[in-house]
Length: 462
Image (cartoon, rainbow, N blue to C red; front, top):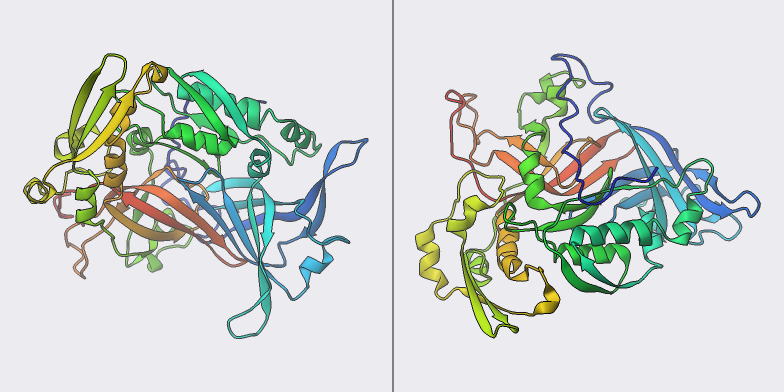
């Protein structure tokens, strides 16, 4: 069945443990993982019977570490599998060794999700290296999502007069999934090659443009730079990326707005080790948290994050249109993860001097391109979103994906149990994610970002 398409975005998935009965244990312990399949093989055209997946080697007993990476700026998933060279695996993969025709099917379960099923194409094998203490040798298998090998064979040169969302639908449905190679792989009788769903956030304005010789997934990212979400989402920050559920052409402001209704809560509990390893409280405890990084104030002043002007030259009506921007005045018009604008306007007013200037031209060919409403404002918003960044490591949770919001319940440093709750608590956007697992443990590392802090409060007052 074909996946849902444009203009119909899916509602955010709520925390899967929310409906768990209080005190009810998880299916298995936090940090555990069940890898039911890690099979290396080839999709071979048998002629008479079509394409079949020929399993070559079961990697479950031979891999050392597997890492699956998501990034909100990357259109596909990346997988790296570290293999022991003790069995000389590379030499045993067929009579010709690795040929670039191989795929790896990975199925696994975590305490919060029934099963994740992914198919990766093998893109590279690293040289064999010695381990740290020269007790053995290893190599890495580098893979990417199966759609990448399809899109790398395609180039789009096509004129559109449509909304951006409609163009995204057309490219994904007719070029990527509609390609002859993709259709051939789908004939595999065991349904190894499955459609990946795509969700597409609506866009405002009909545009007239040509996709200039780009590959399909690259075209999606190019279109994200042109997408406008209307007055409801003034920053119109769109991103195209893939997570474990599929592909997303997403309005980041919409993700933030809806994510607050469903994001899981993680706590930094020094007494977490005393809890049952199958309890929700233990599973949602943060194992480690990096320091909080903040951006350079001088860079932000110079690039117009806090103040800038946009001058548009209307080539048809022979006039100029000026728009000014002040982050302090515009902060509450954006969707944001924090509660209060943290920066002192006096400090930045003294240092900023003349606002940064953007100069644009506008003619009839752009129709409703809205580029004058996006330029500057979007870049300022993207910079605002990186005001506070940290990295958190939690127990392996395959229900987490980039584009989601998580709530960090953080106390102020100290030993007093009644100490105030940290102003660094609150919602964070997941911009990067790494699932790392071996035969004993599964961790998920989250790259988190936040635009503003929360007002301080004590645990006693709530």
